[in-house]
Amino acid sequence: MRKARKQSEEMVLICDFMVSLLSMMIPRFLVWSEGVGAENIRIRDWLSCDPEIPTLPKNFYSLNKKADNGQHTLYTDNLYMDFESVKQLSLQHSKPAGLLLQYGTAGFRTKAEYLDHVMFRMGLLAVLRSKQQKSTIGVMVTASHNPEEDNGVKLVDPMGEMLAPAWEEYATSLANAEELEISSVLADIVQKESVDVNQNAFVAIGRDTRHSSEKLAHAVVDGVTSLGAQYQDYGLVTTPQLHYIVCCRNTEGQYGTATVEGYYKKLSKAFSDLIKQNASSGDSHRSVRVDGANGIGAMKLKEMEHYLQTGLFLHVLNDGACGKLNHLCGADYVKVQQKPPPGLDMKPMERCCSFDGDADRIVYFYNDGAGHFHLLDGDKIATLISTFLKELLLKVDLNLKMAVVQTAYANGSSTRYLEETMKVPVYCTKTGVKHLHHKAQEFDIGVYFEANGHGTVLFSKSAEETIRQLAKHETDAKKREAAEMFENTINLINQTVGDAISDMLLIEAILLLKNLTVQQWDAIYTDLPNRQLKVKVADRRVIETTDAERRAVTPPGLQEKIDDLVKQYKLSRAFVRPSGTEDVVRVYAEADTQENADALAHAVSLAVYQVAGGVGEEPKPL
Ligand SMILES: CC(=O)N[C@H]1[C@@H](OP(=O)(O)O)O[C@H](CO)[C@@H](O)[C@@H]1O
Ligand SMILES: [Mg+2]
Image 1 (cartoon, rainbow, N blue to C red):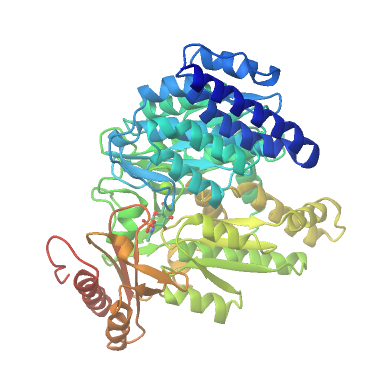
Image 2: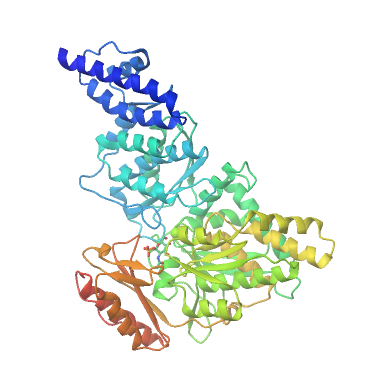
């Protein structure tokens, strides 16, 4: 015992000497000393096994005093982070043995019962991110379009964007760490990201309407408070509302007031100002039938109606009163099944739309009176919005660079129309809004939409400023009016993330201002018939892709099979990729007729099943 104590004294003295020496030599001492601090956790853990704490040099005294109390403390130069509460509370949020999860396309998603520890740990991570960014960070508890039994969590970065990729990796490490490793994973992040542990942190928390969400949000709160940080629980909010709130908090209100009411007021004012500029003979008393997916969007839209006193009548269905979240309803159901939710009584030519479970996606649809269902998805929305913006650009006579960003799921007709008829450059990125958002930031005006209806428009700071200046100071009345319209449009758009409510209001305003019926909007171009299918395989990671996910590089032989199949049909295209949110491989095919698109999708599914280790029943023809 005596020998061990002596060794520990010597070790700490050596550390102490090195700290003093290196602090003189290394300019970024704080960063380095956090590394030493991380190391100290291990020294302290070892020392704390010894009931008799030795007398130690001054700057380590308090460290060992803490160790005497059994506390987990990370020391930096004069600073420390207390991990004792983390240690205590993590025991109440323990990880199911053997569970491994990954921060995927849109955060963590799985069955709600497996997520308690992940929520606690994302609370911890949000605190570190907040300290590092010196900003409010958001944590949204939702599994979006997934079934009610699932849940998930995504972190929101300071400007309302998705979490930075490097931090996604930390999120995965933290979620998968064993309880005893949590402190060292945190210390590692502090060190790698130069987190100023003495910085205040603030976390904004929101949740969807799932039964499991409230309890899971409490776990996030435990994570946040165990690191001594502050938080505000915004309760039931749509995902885009939380993104908006985070952005408002970090821009000192410049983007808007950081409350749900602030969101309603901002959007309602922009919408009513925009439609007041209606010079066409279009009827301004309009109605839309909204399928709220039995989720948070329906609830929030009803709240918003009170602020939206504009002659837009919203008939909200699937409002959660009796139906189940995302079950036979919602944007994902309508897009993938290519049919309306059962029980939705569509009048001919009536505009209908569906939100998803956390209201960050929207698709429109209608019945043409001859019994045909027509879907207006994210591609049609992107086309409508970019047509409108291009016309505005001409009217204000500004030479701003506009582009549309899509994914491989975009219908081939939409890409062709945008590039060839509208002469707008189109870019393709990997699936997942963060990829589209990132690309769209490269332009003065970046319109991005996933085919499933998730998207928005981004304006560069300088483009926005130029338009706002024109709206104020332009002497030519016509130009100024167009600039005002542009400014109202910018105010109506939630630039932080795709937003079903904001997108719906923008679409309604554009249709009114352009005096377009839903059928005329639909007729801008004709979609190529397409089909999306899912295939179950033992391990979907065997499929690796390239070229914005349009080609499979593994397993060997799969892409060659797909190429051969595609050659057998006209106007055809097909690709496969592992889903980031479900344990499936997704198959997409389009061709000249629906029969051919279905046949191609089925043949490709079979190829996946055979080459990539399909499980369960072989895919059947449609
Ligand atoms: C084909 C498809 O619609 N994929 C969706 C889906 O991702 P997957 O990685 O395909 O599961 O969920 C994502 C999150 O909501 C969304 O961004 C994406 O577009
Ligand atoms: Mg969603």
